[in-house]
Length: 348
Ligand code: ASP
Image (cartoon, rainbow, N blue to C red):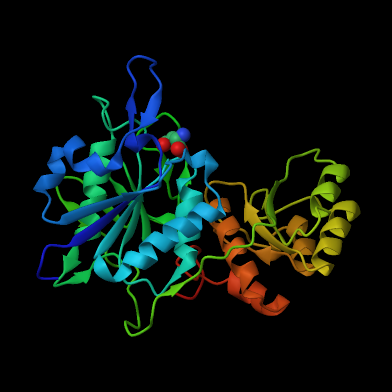
């Protein structure tokens, strides 16, 4: 990379690209092709920036698998012509979207940095400028032409995270995201400090980029709570064509060990539904068999989500269900780290 890095900004929607209509006080999307005029500071960056925008930018609450595929397609079509990608989405579902995109690309060798903001770009106290400028700097960062980042990340409020480890934790604070089970990959202070030992290093540079655009959306997240009724569990597990469940359990992966509950789960597993055990705790991991209340889950074939987030688990489920793996291979593949989304003995 002797020339200036070429960065593609992909705007899907969200607060970052909005301005206030002072007549109505409502936020509305602005013409993103004017991004450099709106943030003249971008001209000071030592890179060439091009931007593309969804025809109709969306609030990230409207995000879905079709839009995931649109983002993937934009990056795929431009992959060879750009050195890095910065994807702007609303923060509300950014962890879901960026986790999904991390699975939809395999053998990635360029940075894809997701960012957004809590306040619109035109707001006096906006966090948008710093988030955007530093994300672009990260997408440009290289060592003798080799990109420092070659994975899907999320940058917000001075921290760069592995995207599929993140969760949105605040609708109010600028520090809107956290990654409880994995440290930040970089921190921005006076200097931009990369934690190079944690950053994914592509092992085989000869491998071609694999792009997946099909995901299975016949999935559900089932969060346990004391008193959850048999009717609720039964109704959810009997949704027609249901293929996968992210089961949010207590603590280190525990759930009721009543006969009814275990019977319903076992019946679903026997029908071919994949059930993933993730913890409701914000940090820590599932350890099936550690307590009596998770032993039976393991015995009936519930899959161990280890320390994966719910956002990443649902994305991984949507991706792996489309791979048509045998029951054994599905379990084995889910329980290993594919993009650094969970901690296991294999290094991804
Ligand atoms: N509701 C907005 C969205 O997620 C909030 C944001 O942009 O951060 O699209």
